[in-house]
Length: 118
Image (cartoon, rainbow, N blue to C red; front, side, top):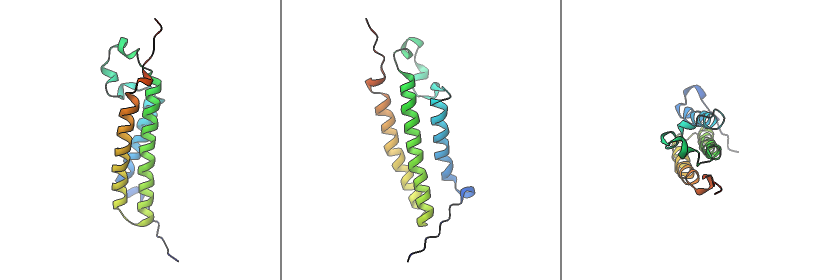
């Protein structure tokens, strides 16, 4: 029977800071109402900002950040379990390759444009 040595060195794992940063970023955008961190939104006029459902967009950003962090944390865990450092790097790029397009496509969809009655 195979024996896995599980060595998750939290104090010596700089890759762990990226998913933690993404989790914090998702929390402050959604719950801290720091919408100015969303690219493009902070440069709009107040009238332009009123045309968007910022709470919906903030939810998309929270979900995207949490999703990317989850993929990275799973990669760190699997890397420690299998004793293969390259898994961390692969899952980092996989998380970004999935998360960034998700954020761009979902947040720019017409779903978050406010329809005003005329």
